[in-house]
Amino acid sequence: MNFTFQISYGASHKYLSDKQIYPSFLRTIPSDSLQVKLMLQLLQRFNWTWIAIVGSDDAYGSQGLQDLYTLATGHGICVPYHGLIPYTLNRSDIKKMVAGIQNSRVKVIVVFALASYVNIFFEEVVDANITGCVWIGSEDWSADVQIAQIPNLHSIGSILGVSISEIQFPELLDFEISYVNSFKGKDTRYGCNQICQECRAFTLQDMSTPSPFSMSFAFNVYSAVYTIAYGLHELLHCKSGQCVKDIAYPWQLLEKVKKVNFTLYNQSVSFDSNGDPSTGYGIGMWSWNEDSPIFRIIGSYNKMTGILQLNGTLKWHTKDNSVPESFCSKPCDNGERRVQTGFYTCCFNCFSCPEMTFLNKSFHAFQIVCIFKMATHMPKVYDMWVKRNGSDIFIVVSSLGQVLICVIWIVLKQPSPIEDYGTFPEQIILKCSETTSVGFVAQIVYIGLLSMLCFAFCYMGKDLPDNYNEAKCISFSLLVYFFSWIAFFTTYIIYQGKYVAAVNVAAILVSVMGILIGYFTPKIYVILLRPELNTTEHFQTAIQNYTKKQSGQ
Image (cartoon, rainbow, N blue to C red; front, top):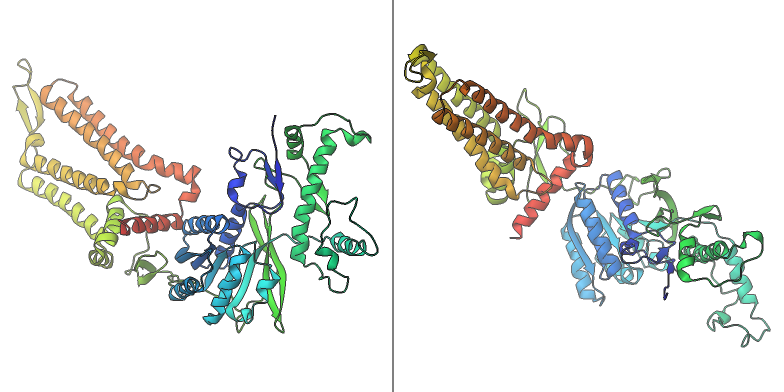
């Protein structure tokens, strides 16, 4: 069997976790999907809801940008600007990107890019004199010393970044020293097939000290090699002290490698079912002491618990060390309601609730459709509807209409028993005189009109966000209501027997149960089994995505 498997120490793209496509791929660096989750928690921790996302124009940056954009907007964070640094590194295009960031008025920018793209990007940021912002970097560049040495980079604000977990790896420096000394007075042309001609020019005096980031990255290489060694050790049954000399196939080694679980420099090395390591990420922050950059680890993200932990108080590059803010509109105070202004749900005005009222966060089908449809197609009508409490007025007026019909009906012609001789020749039936009166018909017609109006609005809401289905639930309930009463009136017309009352009771029960089950069952399901959908952020995202979709048509 021709089979090869790989263990990577640097490939972090999330699709490499798909075992249907890459069944024999493992890695010692966490997946990019993990650092996207870390970034989201960081944004939520400091309540940054108005951000920009920049990526590099390659598989790493474009996928990272897309994943973070989807995750952030799904949690109530607005992204007024996002773009890719062109692979050509054309300065005029990058200048336009920087101008777009400035025009968006964001104070937090996530840069999910390879280090080779970031250098020229930050040079343009410095030239544009952007200051007072927070820059969140992805793992590939956030701890890169060369980027931190860009002239005047410290002036752009606070720079945080995802980083490989810091690992103390002192043997790396000892190895490099030994490697340099090994060339002294030795002829290495024979017997060694891994001669680095450039490395032979190094001396102990000009050899740089490995940074913590370099050591951590080297540890990924080190643990990948050890993983193979542990797998071979198990495959060849070396525990007894002597290995079995037998033919070993790569697929056999892969099965052993998947199950390795050992500790290296106090770090656990193992893999999950996707071939990803059990380790998480660290998060660091740059500080400048006399313009000398220092990257300090300030927290960590645990993969198993999904919890971001920050260590102590952070040193922000602000005048009073206050946490920078980035929002479109300040949160409304208690007793105020939000009215969205413009395209993004993060931008709104706050209006005081009327006296003796409170903010009701639930929406009925009529109100939902008005919000979506009016906000998209009739913004002026929508503003008037909100300011005048249109939904409340509609409920009051429609209820008063029903009461008015009943009062007029009873006052003008009160019901009385009448004798029915026509239904059964041998019997006289006493029944209510108003079962076929004008008042009774008016009441039925009015209820029918309200039901048809409600159904019409629900049908208009059939193209609302897929993950928000209240209008669909009400449409289903109303269909059950219609069918039950159509069945009753049809039976009443063609049948006048003793079971008419039972059919009437059945129609009432079916219509009521249809509304209760059709409307409340999905809500109970969401509350008990899908609580993540029962949040304000989820509803705001539904509005934003719907509005964006409609504006693009």
